Image (cartoon, rainbow, N blue to C red):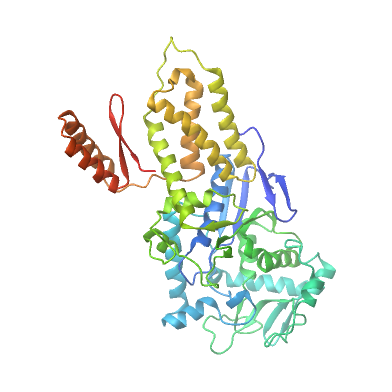
Length: 498
């Protein structure tokens, strides 16, 4: 089923490349995680779900994946700049809390939301504040290699010197240093830099700065870009297979990571760079800094003026998967409502597939055309995943399989028309894709199956007794709960309303 090799779009080369791990079957994957100063929003969900798919599919392909995703709890200043207030410290002042209380509160809420979205936990989840010694050591190495300088207790990376000695700064994003220089201007508080394009490795803390550590240069804190280089190299080595994150991190964050790695270890940190695209609202990027974001909890409970209703975690996950991770995904109630229907169709299919049994019938011939259609759809679903994790296309092929499953359920098709091998492959592929690869779960309350069985029995008895008023009442009550009754030829069943 996976005869074709996996291809990944590498942002560094701007080409799809056959995935060849550095040390197979081991795969090292580092993904930039959240800065924990607020509740997770739909943009955070897209990054988490996108790389959860990568993790799941690589695991499905029998790779042994070490997935590292960091928590940023220091050093991320306002506007992603080298000046200004730390985002977490600012929140701490507003709420009259310790910065670590803020970080813990929002890290916990992030984990809660990621669990609701059924994303796998990373293998390792390091925090920036837990790796200050590693970051200080990294700065020392860069200084020793002559590519950083200290001014008034702060340390900056020398971009122009790096450009002359190591490699081109801007190799990932396509930015050109000369253009960055000509487009820059000296800002207040940045005059201590040799050049405007230089970036902070260590910042001397002002008296009011809450988060601070001792170093040989000053009492201060590490630059935002430094933590990922320090932690990825510690847990995955100086070079690893995949580095992921949102497209908004490509410049300057990931560009700076490449520069730091080459300046200290003389190697690019990752072989393949992957970036998920943005979620937009009316064509504008969704984000905390723009104030146009919708938190995941607001989505789940419908508590936002842009929401017409609440959307369940699996609906949100499915919505994200309906677009390729490198495509923009525009938020709308219509798109989420369509996702809700699509998700329920697949889950109804999953329920049906679990009920289907193969029955041999010597009087029924195998339909070779039907067999070919099913095998082509199965092959196409895996081909879509092998083509840079194209979940949108894979889902389209799953719906083709679902048509066959529904036809088997209604009796329009006989299992014997497929032959046992293809029947088993159909059911297994559908199950594996929905639950293992796409990570979609059936959302149901406690004792739902047992309660529905009781209600269906009451419905059947009322129908047998020709108590049509009771029949209609039960149908209407279940419909209000999003469940429809299906009168089959020899039985009564139920399904989620699509």
